[in-house]
Amino acid sequence: MKKYELLIKSREAMMSAVQVYNNPHITFKSETFITLSVIAWTYLLHTYYANKKIDYRYYEFKGKRKRYHRTKYGAYKHWELERCLDEEECPLDSNTKKNLKFLIGIRHEIEHQMTQRIDRSISAKLLACSINYNYYIKKLFGNVFGVDQELGMAIQFSPIEAEQKSILFNNEKMSTNIKKFITDFEDTLSPDEIGNTHYAYRVVFVRVDGKRVNSETDQVISFLPTNSPEASQINATYTLIKETEKKKYLSKEIVELMHQKGFTWLSVPEMTNFWKNELRTREEYGLYITKSQWMWYQNWIPVIEKYCNEKQKKICSKIEKGYLPSEIVNIMQQRGYSRFSRWWFVNFWRNDLKIDRNNTEYGFYGKYNRFYWRKTFIPLVEKYCQENSSEFK
Image 1: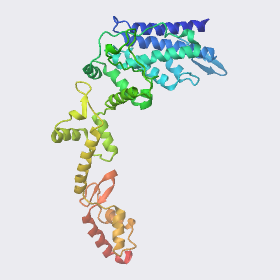
Image 2: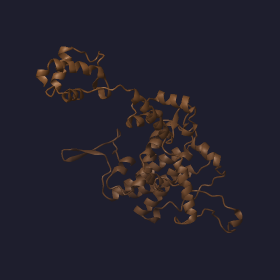
Image 3: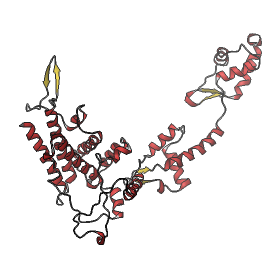
Image 4: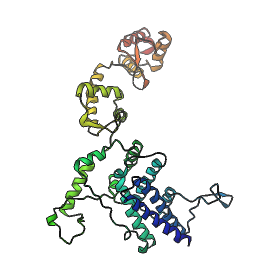
């Protein structure tokens, strides 16, 4: 009886979520949908685990006995949705799990502070969530529990113009924390996972000439075979749009990338000086995501890398030639002092000349904090070898 009641409440929670989202008078729609759908999925998985005789209560072992965790009022602490998804026996596919973990992350953000205008930014994930729910409640418990016959499609009274799409995508009024979460979460996904309909369900609406629509037609949404020319064109268009939404980079991330390529001298001020004084513009290489935060497109990377390569050549041409101790020893041995060794070399500069390597004109510290001897030091070493030729020849 309890399991049946859980499933009924799960189903009603999802229907409530969709009904609230479709209500044109409610502005708190995405937040409400996420909260209710998380409850719906939690109850659905609790029912599944109960049927499988999997204990979904938190507990720890005290000896051989289970000690259950309880609330301060004495009730059992049951698994939250994220713990249900991590269970090895979870029946959901990986993309459905990713969709739900995305929504859980958004919920964590919205429960601590007010958000603004996030509906259109995450609507594809919400639609996928509801479709996934209907699929799994029927798969796990039978078609009689499906919600697809209970709810219809929401009607939108105004079309989305092309320029609106740009405004929506670059909407600065959307909370920065939500934007950051979406970016960080989706950066961990592969292109196949982002494109999977279990993660986000996107519908393309195309304006149709009314003269070509049958007078008895009540719906003007056409579902095309994936291998049809029309579908190929839509996929190509969607791919083109998706390509314009690639990962963006902070200035410090660009600098870190260049450091990994060996240009360790590059800094954010150096890069700023380059585009301001040499390029004199950066408009085609990035955009402001807030009033003060600039981010770079991927096409900036080859530009700054080319600059680094050119400057590196100039730097290398100015770098003074230095010699490691082993190189100086080799030079002396080639000049006939075959028994001259590194030990003698160190003894010479340290004990005879008493050189302080932190303050000397004969050498300098270079890459990886290694000490290099200048060319002017070689004649002193050779003179030392000549004076002790009986020892070294």
